[in-house]
Amino acid sequence: MKELEEKIRKEGRVLPGTILKVDSFLNHLVDVALFSEMGKRFAEEFKAESITKVLTVEASGIALASIAAQFFPNSPRVLYAKKSRALNQDSNVYSTPVFSFTHNKQYLMTVDKQYLLPTDRILIIDDFLANGGAVNGLLRLCEQAGATVCGIGIAIEKGFMGGGDRFRSEGHHLCSLAVVDAMNDGEIVFRQ
Ligand code: 5GP
Image 1 (cartoon, rainbow, N blue to C red):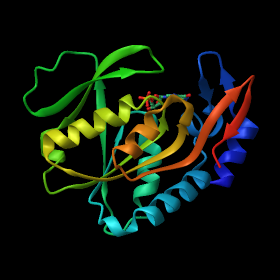
Image 2 (image 1 turned 90 degrees about the vertical axis):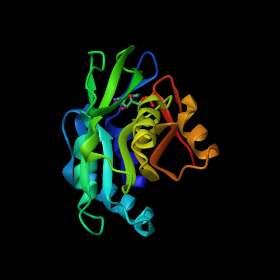
Image 3 (image 1 turned 180 degrees about the horizontal axis):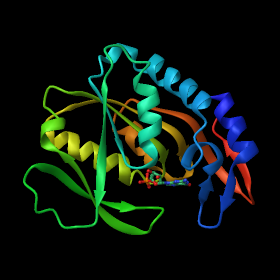
């Protein structure tokens, strides 16, 4: 998506350790107009899928998932998985351990069982896809619930980290609006 790529080029900052900082429109300040265009793009890509819920993970995924959901038919609800540091002692939740790339530590990703159902047709949405740990956690929660995952929508995929290509090779319908293939000396190269 050209508009997103231009925004990344203009406002993105490459930090040491392959982190792309985009706080001015995605991870701190939210550019609602841009999010709406991204949401429309996801709705177009997944329009045939009869999505019943949009699933994301707190915190940054919530705004994008919520703005995107309104462009889908039948007003799917947005369900966000929580990140807990405690061990899971709650039998009312589905849970899975996830390694956080940005915080360099493991957390427990959980959703309440009553909100993720075997009848659900799920679209997973997140702000970034790097190694794939966060998306993989969301896939595992859907698997535990017996829900059908119809697609994965990502704002920015760091293609050089391999998570996205792995999901594609596994047959997932993955739509990344910008794929960064390299961040060399601060120069950002997008996949064509
Ligand atoms: P993964 O689990 O795919 O390795 O990483 C995805 C998660 O880590 C996303 O939910 C996102 O919050 C965070 N993340 C990974 N790489 C970046 C990055 O370069 N910049 C920002 N802002 N977040 C990232």
